[in-house]
Amino acid sequence: MPRRIRITRKTLLALPDPSPPTPPAAKLPDHPAYQQIMAVFAAADAPLRARAVCEAINLEIAPSNVNNVRLKLKRLVERGILIEPEQGLFTQPRP
Image (cartoon, rainbow, N blue to C red; front, side):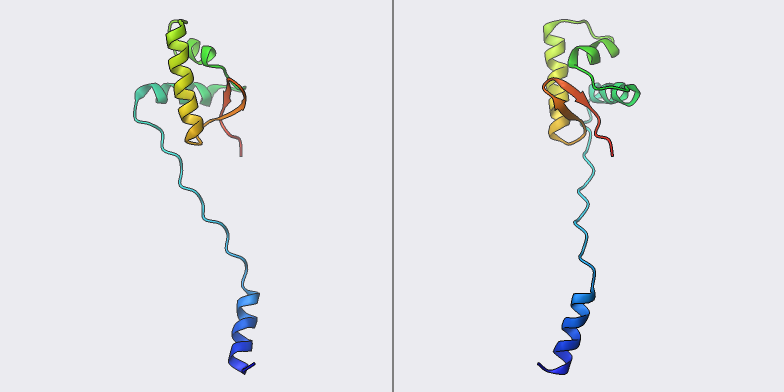
């Protein structure tokens, strides 16, 4: 092996492995309801269900309201903003 190739190979092997790229931060939807939901989770100290989120944002506890909030929570999970550790239970991911 020529000397330059050995030096290059040695140099490349000495380099640290590149760290994986940091994923872009998840973007919160623009609708004000999402701002209210995230404010509830910022103040929460435990995972919440859709019904509890409705109560916290002073929405009437009606099936349509609970289902709409649940859909919004699921969208936030899909975007990586919230997690669902158990079926129907939502929280913010902790570092």
